[in-house]
Image 1 (cartoon, rainbow, N blue to C red):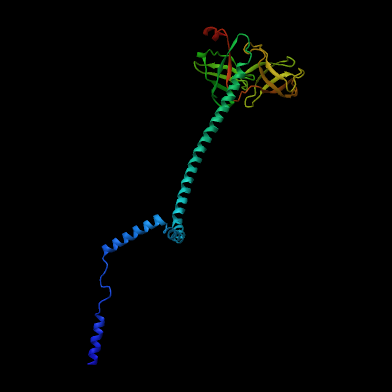
Image 2: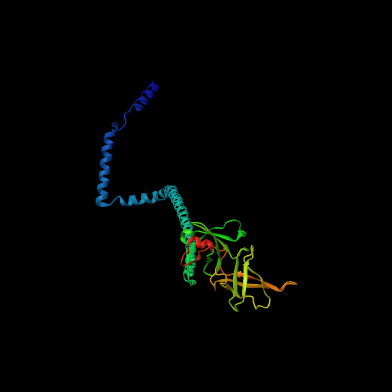
Length: 299
């Protein structure tokens, strides 16, 4: 019976109801939270009571925010670096192209300035009486390089005649030996087939010179050993053949060979003063009055 009482008392204790048997519902919790929020907002707006709380919370969360933000900052820096790198490469490519263009234009400008200087020198040359000048350009070198011939870009249509002397800003270049309607061929003073009557500008010694062929020189094969020709003398056209006007500079003596055994004649080599083997504008000296075609061919 005692045991029965003990069991009965235990069940009574176990079945005893809690002090607060009513549970707050979700709707009521929402209302209470909303009211608490409004109250805190009012107190913070009026009294500033939440400022210390926010400061304390920010001190705790600031390091965490900084750590979490570092990956995004690093990605942003890397993206900015790659973008700037691409822009720099693109700018470098553009500048390289501009530099190449400017260098090409500079080279072209230097060439044009040189040609203009040559043209000014040509136009300032005093022309022989009864001659007029036609400006021409070299367009080709016909045959092999040892032929010492040039093809110019004007011909009979411009008034060019066979036998006309050709000069540049420094002296005699050669003679027109063949003429077409729009082209003419010039045999230069370097050719062995072209003979030019010469004389020394210093003492008037008359000579006959022709090209040395493969060498960029004019040769005087036979001359008086006692004629007084010296190294450095300027040789000009004598005008005795009627083809070349007198006084055109031709070459400057660079070497004199004494007479060979059993020969009374000495020889000399001279360096042309004109730019025979260089590009540039040339002048063709043609008569002022054009003779008839038949007379020109007959002469």
